[in-house]
Length: 133
Length: 69
Image (tube, rainbow over all chains, first blue to last red; front, side, top):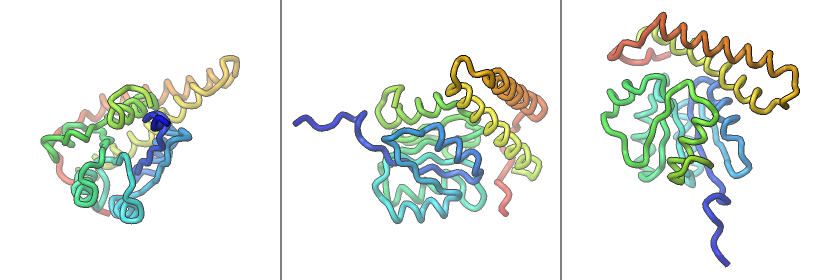
C-alpha cells in the first residue's frame, strides 16, 4: 500500500503569542481537521509545551514578547529540535533582521497584520513548498 | 521599545484582530446574508484605522528592547 500523501498527514503546530486575541486568530486561521494546534502565551510556556511534546512540525511565534522574545525562544528550541520549521510573526521585519541577520533555511517570517490566506500560504510553503495546505 | 511603542504595538494588534476575524466572518457568511455588509464595514474600518496608525506613527528602527513587565 502506498504511504499516505503529505496532504493527508496530521500536522502539529505550536503557536506562541502573548496577545490572546492574536493567538485566537492564528487558531481560527489554521482551523483544519489535519492540524493539531497547541497554544502558548509566552516563550517559557512554549518551552514547557515542547518538553511535553517533541513531535512538532512547525513553531509559529510572535517576535516581540515580554520576558523572552521570539528569536531567543527559537534559539532555545533549536537545542532540542534543531530542524524544526519556524514562522515568525512580526509587525516589523527590520526588527527581526536586527535580532537575526540571517534566517535559517527552515525559517520564514510573515508580516502582521496577516490574512487567513496569507498565514495558510506561509505555513504550506514552509511545510510542503507549495501554496496550499 | 519605549512604552509608547508598546502601546502602538498593542493597539495595532487589537486592530489586526478585528480585521482578521471580520475577514474570516465575511468569507464564511452566505452570499445572501444581510450581515455581510455590516461585517464589510467593520473590516473596512479596521483596515482604515491600521492605515491611519501607520501614517500617524511611522516606525523608526533601532528603538531598543521590549519593556519587561
